Length: 534
Ligand code: GLN
Image 1: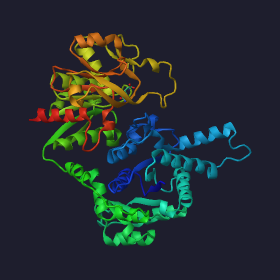
Image 2: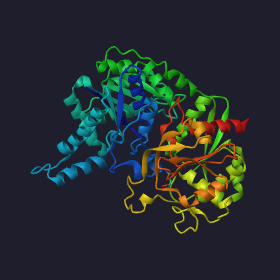
Image 3: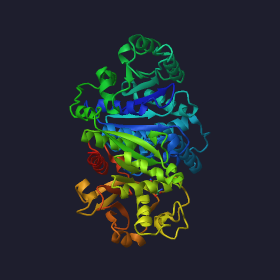
Image 4: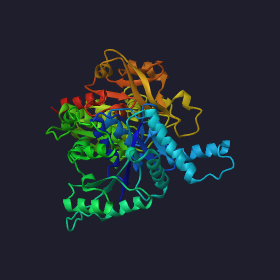
C-alpha cells in the first residue's frame, strides 16, 4: 500500500517547494523506499504547453510526451526516475474530465459540485497515480500558496485523503518563507505562523514544518514556529541556501528530517545510505576554473525559463570539475548593431536555445555565424539547431534569404519547414511532435562518439524540421547530417567536421541529463569549452 506525503507552501511562491519535495523523495529513496511524485498545478490550463516560459518557467517534456511543470524535471533529476505526464494534475484536466462525465450522464440526476465531484476526481487522480507507480511512497506537491482560491479544492481533497487513507499513511509538510529584515537583520516567523493558520482554517494540521531562510533558522524562531504551528520542535526544519540544490537533501537529513518522516509514517528499518549521493552532491562544490557560456535565447530574464538546460550544463561541468558561468544574451542587440557580435569572443562557448517565433532570430543567426567562423564551441538545441541550418544555408550555400517558415512563411528557400503531419493541425495545445523518439547516429560522427552508441532515445518538442529537399545540398557543402529518426525521414543531429565542436540537435537532450550522469552533447560541449579556454 502506498503512503502519501503532501507538500504545501506558504507566504509566497518560488520558495523551493520543488527542491524540498525532491529532497524528501531522496531521503526516502536512500532509506530503501521506492518513491514517485505528483505535481498539482491549480491553474486552469490543461497543461503547461501553451504557457509563456517567461512567466511560468520552462515547459518540461516527459518521456511519454507530456508538456509539464518544470518541477517534474527536479523530481526526475533528484530521483533518477522518469515521471509520467499523468503525474502533473491541473484544474483544467480535473474540470475537463468532470464536465465530460456530466455530459455523458454519469452523474445523472445529481447536481455536480466542487465537493464531492471535483474533489472525488482529484482523489481519484492521486490514488490512480499511486497505483500506476506502485511505489511505497507518493509525494504530492500542491503548487501555489495556501489560501489561493484555485488551490482550495486540491488541499480539501488532500484533507479528505488523510481521513480515508489513515493517519499513519499520510503526512503533511508545509514550507514557508522566514524573511530576514534588512534593517534589523532579524529573522521573522510571523508570516510562517499566518500561513499555518491558513492551512488549519481549511482543516489541515501539518506534521512537519520547514522554514525557508537564507541562513539556518535561530532556535528561538524554530521554537516559535513549533509552538504556533502546533508541531513538535523536532519536526521543524531549516532549509537554507546551500552551495548547490543537490546538497539540500543532505542538509535537511542532517537535521533529522528523514528520521522524523519515517517515524511518523511508521516506516521502520530505514537506515539511510547516502554513499552514492554524497560524491554527486560534492561534485557541485565551487571549482576554481570558470567557463563563460554565452546563452542566446528569448526569455533571458528568468533563468527558470531554461532550467533543464542550465542544470544539464552544470551536470557536465561538475563531472569535469569546472564551473560554468551562464551569461544570458538578448540577441536583438546584434540586430540593432551587427558589429557588437564580436563581444562573443569573451565566451568559451555559445549556445542557441530552444524557442518559438521571430523575435531575436536574426541576432541568433549572427551569433551562430560568429561561432562557426571563429571556431567557438557551439551547441544548438531545437530552434538553435534549426537556425544553425538556416545560417549554413545562407552563408555557406549562399542562399541569402533562406529561412525557417516559422519566421518567414514566404521564403524562397524554406530550409526549415513544417513537419508534414503538422500541416492539418489547428489546435496549439499538445499537438507538437512530443516525447522520446529513437534516433540513429552515424558511426564515425561527433554525435556517435559522444553517445558511444548508434541508437539513442531523446525527447522532442517541435513542429518544424529540416526540409528533405535540402539534405543533399547541405551535406555536399560540408554540413554533416549525423543523426536520423528511426524511419530516416527526419534529421535529428547536425555537425561541422571542419570545426572543433559545432553540434546541433532537433531533440532536447537536457531533459534526460542527471547529476552524476550528464547528457552526452552537454558533456561534449563543456569539454570543448574547456579546451578552447586553455
Ligand atoms: N519553434 C521550433 C519548432 O516548433 C522549435 C521548437 C523548440 O525549440 N522547442 O519546431
